[in-house]
Amino acid sequence: MTDSVRVTLEGDDDATSVTVYGNEGDVSTGDATFRFSVDGSTEDGDDHRAEATGDPRRIAPLADVPTDGTLRCEARAGNRGTELILRREGEAVSAWRNSCPHKPEVRLDPGPGAIVRDDQLVCHEHGARFECDDGVCTAGPCRGDALESIAVAVRDGAVYLTDDRFDSCRRLDEPAA
Ligand code: FES
Image 1: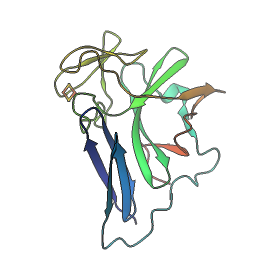
Image 2: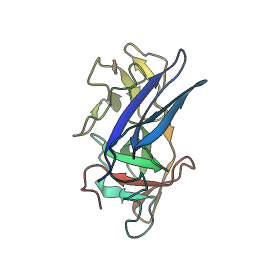
Image 3: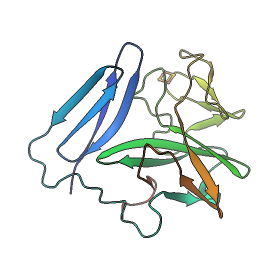
């Protein structure tokens, strides 16, 4: 098995947080790129999950995406994984990077679903509140900042990743294939 490592890089104006599979990788934000290589890996970082049957961009049935919480999943681009959260409102689904603008290493959804209160996402760490349509923070330490939106679409009762930055996506509440 290939281990994964979660890397967060913070610059003056930007920050990013990804999961890297395999024994080497890089993370970039602004002008800075952090490259690393880890000894002792037993396997390369080839995508070992995107081979799931069917469309690798299919995330989940629409009905599995909650309205009172979020569904956590991971989008992959090469050997890099980015955690996303999905929330449904009626027949529509919104997706964002699972990272709080106040502290990018903090996941809005640490596993059981992000807090949704009065139609807003709430960060469990310091209580920042985000609009569920445009992801803008309306209260809290990162007021005025916005969650990073990820493009998804609903087709035939299922949610698909349509964001060109990624190749595939899988749910994190299901065992890896
Ligand atoms: S880490 Fe989210 S509000 Fe502080």
